[in-house]
Length: 387
Ligand SMILES: [Zn+2]
Image (cartoon, rainbow, N blue to C red; front, side, top):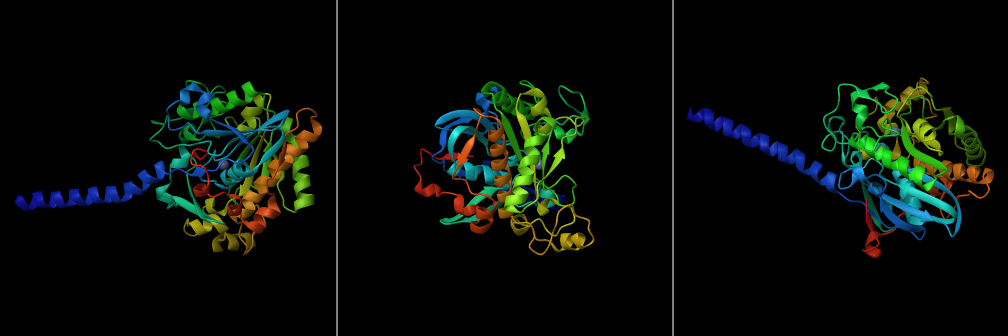
């Protein structure tokens, strides 16, 4: 009897030790803050909850950077980390926050749109919790997040997710996916409140253009592209043609399917006067048949299994030994975004959004995305924003 009790106590202690060993890194990751140095173009930093009271004090609230030009003009919103396991868009948006100057119009930037997903992980798939980008002053550490919000923040999941207001039946997990909960509602599930607050920014500020930055598998047909509904397709086509001609990379246009609800490129256009664009850059890390999900794979996109699949023509993007680096993905997002804004501005006099001092594709590939981040230790601590 005594021996049995002792065995039970030892097993319990082992289980508690394992729980602590596994739990502490996840606890720290959830609380890790990335210091952002707002650049000379940032005129205001607000919170998403300022546009949706249902987010106040919740883990879904997130910083919103506003960059206003000297001259009035049009307005654009840039949304990144809708899926927090597709981090190139977040890096591109932070490069804009830390460097851009706006000559005309207003740029609104949300670098970590799904803040809960940005503090979530996928332990079963062996996701790294962080990744580091080399900079001129050391390295900058970012959280690697997950596709969906954490169940710690939104729970329980329904058996079937019924989209609001279109009532389409979607997979249960998509109620935590902020690219299925558009246009949202003020008193719905937490992620519906996130997309609702963003819709409120677009409706109340009269935003002309919305760009939602993503990454997609090389084996997924909708990759390396701009997804656009009818109202955005002309600008998207012009942007795609221009980056192809001037910057020599592909980002073709895919139509937004009218019958598939909850996505930004569909609902933003249908529920606001805004023109939406969703940008996909190839991210080999997310493909299923790869080696271990390491930070290295996330950063260089090189994988021998994908290479052999490319030789069998199973991928939807050109792929060789060079992989598909983070710098290339960040650069594509930056150039396509700038080109969308330029094409919109050319066709909408009085509503221009003119952005300066932002690197384009070739600059980022040559210098590395990290070279555009400023040292938080050298900045005024009162100016820093923790994202
Ligand atoms: Zn995505």
